[in-house]
Structure formats: C-alpha cells, structure tokens
Image (cartoon, rainbow, N blue to C red; front, top):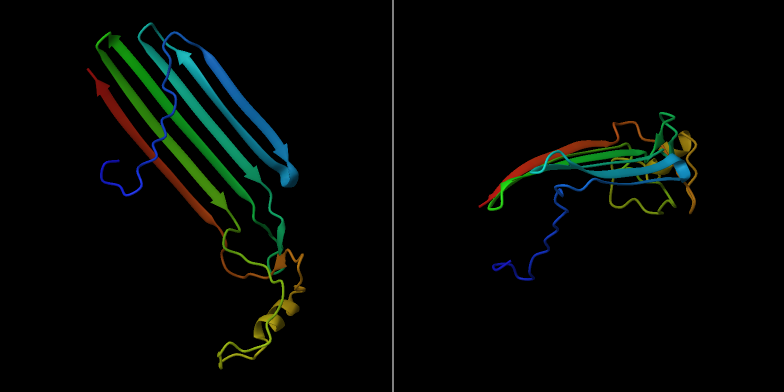
Length: 171
C-alpha cells in the first residue's frame, strides 16, 4: 500500500462464476490419524446469481503423553467455511457477498517436554535445586532427546474462532 514501508500482500480468492458448475476437493490421511479434507463448489443458481462455498477440516490425534492425567496431548481440530454470493442483475451492476467462519481447538499448544535437567538453581531459593526433576520423576517422566511425556496438572489447550463478512457493490 501507499503508506507501508515494504508494500502490501493482497490475497484475492476466486469469485463465484455465473453459469459455471465446478466442484474441487481433496482428502488426505496420515500418521496419528491426521485427516485433511477440503472442498470448493461453485453453483450457478440463475443467469444472474451464483454461489461459491468452501469448507475445510483438519484433525490429528495427540501423541505427547500426560502422565498426570493419562491424556494424549498435541491433538487438534480445525475447521473453516467460506460462502460467497455474486449477483449481477445488469451489465453495469454487481453485488458481491462474502462470509467466513473458522475454528481451532487443540490440547497441547503450550506444553513442553524435558530433554535434560540443568545442574544449577537459577537463583531460586524457595524450592529445592532439583525440584522440577523430583516432580517429573514422581510421575515417571524420563528426560532424554526422544522424550514425549510430561506431567501437567492444569488446563491445557486452546479454543478460538473467527468470523467475518463483507459486501461490495460495483456500479
């Protein structure tokens, strides 16, 4: 943009196409029950109106074991939906609607695993020098380069959603 120091990146997605039916999708499956699915369909409703709908879903099972709760962490579910409508009642007028919704849920974006224990107290005087190691050992956590276990007792995870819409009229 004019007042930006490095310019602007503008992403413009495909508008609905009047008179054209199209459906494009993709599904994949991977390790840890990872599923990625998406589909876009363009539907001509009349000679002056069309819809374009896009939906997506991503899922993965957890793989980091919480030895405190028994839960598998680092799982996620994400979904998105976008609807577009294009109405061209005359050659000189078009009305373009866009609405979107996206959600995200995970249960491990803020956890960490222990690869090794330090040897100092880091200046902390209120707890024993090896407090973290003692607490993790109590639950069976073994530090190491391939460790994918931990012991967390608080709520872990994230849930959020976003949505928006716009209308543009060109005459």
